[in-house]
Image 1 (cartoon, rainbow, N blue to C red):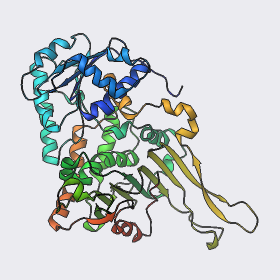
Image 2 (image 1 turned 135 degrees about the horizontal axis):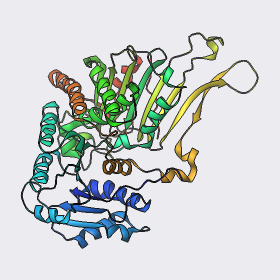
Image 3 (image 1 turned 90 degrees about the horizontal axis):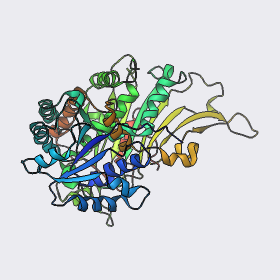
Image 4 (image 1 turned 45 degrees about the horizontal axis):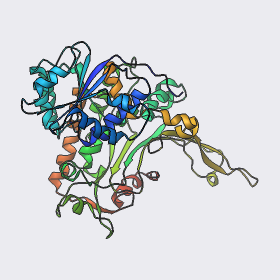
Length: 476
């Protein structure tokens, strides 16, 4: 077995938005897998709540279709109930209160548009469902800017304490992201080198092959900066750059992440590149996908960030994300500096050690190490990877690794907030992001077009080239 399964206590989990895409694709399959693994006890219940008119039998049938055939599926379905609920009205709240049990832990998963967070929180408390141990899970986007994020935080704070609110970012639930912390803080090999003295630069890439189909209205309002950089990529940057916390617990970890965000310098206009994919005849471009012929929303962004503290001063962080790129790949690359002096001469070439953390599609890590190329004819060097890819290292057991939602939902039930964002952390991220967006809006420059299946606009390559560096290839 890959991991030891520790059952959680019985609970009632209310999924508001239970008929939506996220619930059917991610939340319910995650719960089903944890049920099959024996982590969710038979006494636990999942209560679906949505505006859709149906009964419990109808919802169970929809969930069964989403889950497909599988062992213990019927036993899991028997744990499900359904209530018709109006998030902004009073319909269904008395029925929900009657369905929830008073003697077990209660959690609410708001799998809905953020504008419903405040009315839902208000009604949960009004109808006596917000006990001291009640927990609330909210999905991104958590705000559109700093002002809206503050308003959402204030609305939730009216009805729940901060230690009851779980702002979920599924990237933090990925096994490799947590292994990043284990590699840093569990090995004397890396932590002494994890600083500006030894690290040349760091690259974070989140590349997608898909366009914005199905999310056009939201995405055209948000763009890549709000959709990916402000949350997912910011969280990855924090885990790379933060100081070792005193212990691995929620407040200690989140305190160190907050320090990183507050140490970020403002991004200079010349250190950011925006792009927008264009159609190629067979595949529509961004503007066709969103139905806005004049849209100036970016589907790609690359920028150079600097963390002004003693550990990282002078070490740039290059961040990149985009739609319709060459491959689906999320990677963090820590590029170490060259040896201060090469005893092998210039003919041996330049070689760097690179720790590459692959988040998707194949989770794992590789460490490039320089060795001698086999054979006679002098000292020729090449870089070879020490491969820690989970699928190869663990074999069939890799399939048993829980996905991000499995881990994070179980953390909610256990009351562990370590992998969730705190209110001040969210606001600090927006305080850094807002001026970047305001700056390019003031300049009025349209995003640079780039070809579908490419690595993004040419200007993004120049962002690295002028520093004497180059992006790593986007490979699946």
